[in-house]
View 1 (cartoon, rainbow, N blue to C red):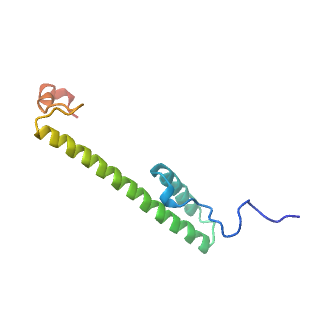
View 2 (view 1 turned 90 degrees about the vertical axis):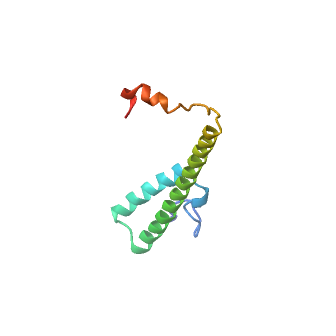
View 3 (view 1 turned 120 degrees about the vertical axis):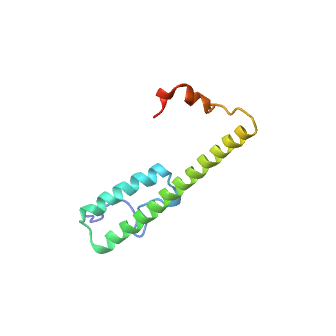
Length: 106
């Protein structure tokens, strides 16, 4: 009788490297990791492995979000620079348009 459970080889990592995950993949795995840890049904060593993985996933998510924030700031900087140069950037509206329709304010 074969007592082997699973198809991995001993010592093989069950998780892909965090660096290879997209933001969505890292976020989803982090959510699942938190759920697993909240169950509290693992031993200390296994819990620590999940905790460490969760920390790495959280840092990866933060790095993805920081990168996205930088890209938005750069895009806004380009729009501001174009506005100051007198160019009319696509999909932007002059400030006066907000004054004409005060009911559109949020």
